[in-house]
Length: 183
Image 1 (cartoon, rainbow, N blue to C red):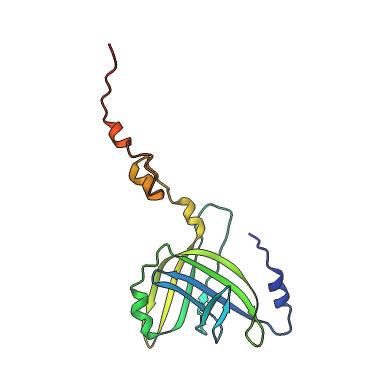
Image 2: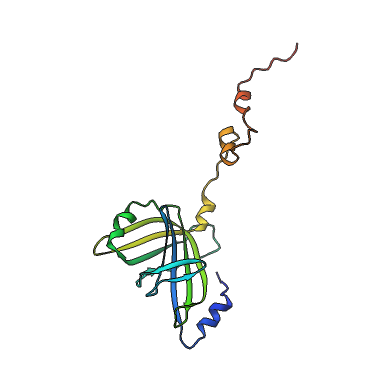
């Protein structure tokens, strides 16, 4: 599957000195974790991305026209050891993850960036030590196409989306209603 690259990234890649970086935005339940592969923090998109220096790796991100999930892995190493317990207690399944590719100038100002892929975190493996390493297994957004969306015509189901609307409030009473018609 082909993908268009923004003109900012094309211009940046043709410069005499090119400093590419990868950035990952992981939506953890206790707050977003944003890291980049640079040796210092940068700000783009109105958010600050903290440097881990060794982002580790982002595995090959596959795309295709088939209606199935394409998985990828994100490895982050060099995380301070005091984050070990925090990472172990996070339930990441189904949470959003966004991977960016960007370029910076010599003074670390952003030239341009683009979204590589958006997915959902599935599981994570935390390896503790002096520094912590985390490998997050992710799946593409296309996995949502395979999940059933079951809706019921009940008052509780309707009020889940529309809390003040009582459209279905009498449905349960009508199910067992005994109507007597004339002779």
